[in-house]
Length: 390
Image 1 (tube, rainbow, N blue to C red):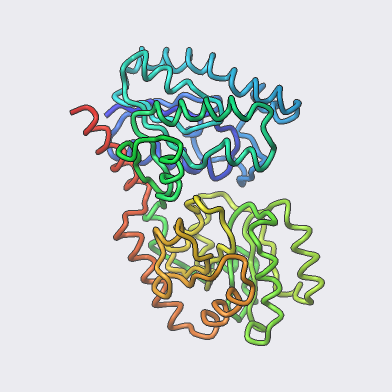
Image 2 (cartoon, rainbow, N blue to C red):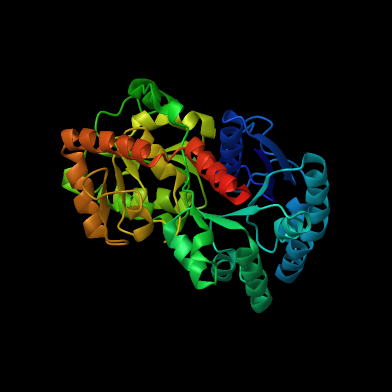
């Protein structure tokens, strides 16, 4: 199968990890992939640790965040013009069997080229951007944005969503249920086969820690509610427990202040960022993987990596997470935002090493049974493409 992969991503964050991993998975299954993008993601690993603010290289588009909001929106819509030309040239040369496009706000290039060449378009949707942007930066032309997004969602041959919850949201926008394909975030299973807890703790600078370690990986913001975990460390049942944050983020100063106010600075460790290729090496340092809060339609990459590493997770009890997790089997789920419920779950996991071990092994089994791997996703997409071509 020949795949024309189009995206508009510049940041070297989880988006780039997803792009690189899926393209590598396609190629490992002997599919040909041609990447069309502002900055290609498959020419090796990012040279520095990923952050949401770091770009993969210079482009005039990297300046777009500094212009007024209405100008930025016009530019995002305008991107479709050169992108359509570029994607059409690539399709004319490559003659792909399918266009696989990562959805970006205002981008109609995939739809345009799919129709022009009569080639299927599989549109990967990780979030409904009109809803998300309306809540964050705001939109200058919300009605127009909704019409464009509806046209893109409803025009794609298949829509690959990261959770069924997100799929249900798109059905409300008019997407035919038969055109929705669920492809959660995946893991590189082979990277999680030889855990070395001692080396992992040395890597994170916590080799001196004897007690249980609660771990979080990612670009932490205030809405991740890591403040609830820091507050929980003050309880007697968690007095020997440490919190390790791998990554960085705008909430760091607030979290440091919270740790100081709670008198637990010696047990809250900011380990700094790591390349994504090194994450599997440091996860064995954790006894519990944390997802204290997440939006209601996401498929957290960190969660699946905790599971592959054999780590029990603590996560909010939400439908999108229950698509993967089973309470008291491979994770403990608590009422979202409920600090008492979160503390109760933490106490349960901290005091019972045997339970942690059993839940961690169950989590690994869940990854295998559901095939939550990048290769699994590539197979699902390839199988769907084969149906479209038959």
